[in-house]
Length: 219
Image (tube, one colour):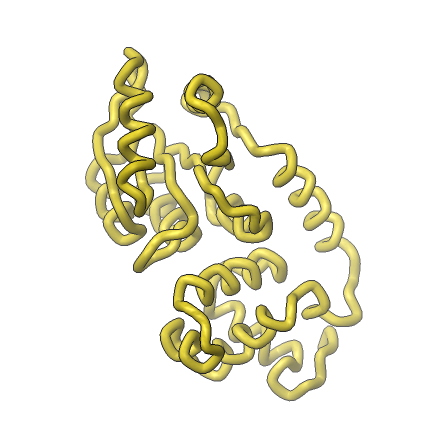
């Protein structure tokens, strides 16, 4: 049985490398490629592939948002995040959005191929480092926190405040003198750490828990 694959990465050399690797097999077929999140969503809807290999850091729609949209359009598709980032909270956000597996681009060809076969067979493969972070996050979620924002860095708090003030990614980036891609990364961390589903929930959480008034309590 052949597994249809959609490759999503803004670096063409990465897509070419994985496509070349899979072309040497009889059990994988690359049916589409996307260089950004928006294109990935469209192709996932049209192709409904068995497996989607996706990066987290991309232009337009980032990986976490794309995964969430893809799972609503093609729930049958297994999603494997392939990333070079060491931001485990961002990776956790991707898993919460619907990714079943998380791999790193440092994996060698044979190792990657074997792992993709496991995923195609229905396994959920998560790097041990990320798995450990998930366990810690679950434990934190069960424990009451005096300050619900204590887990956020100062920069993440700045981004959340600007978001709660109604700022777009572009406006937040300009106000904080950082790139839009960095804003997306920080927002992904915020959603993961606070266990929130999307930007709307983040804004509501910030106001409800007193971030905007300075009264940071459980409310």
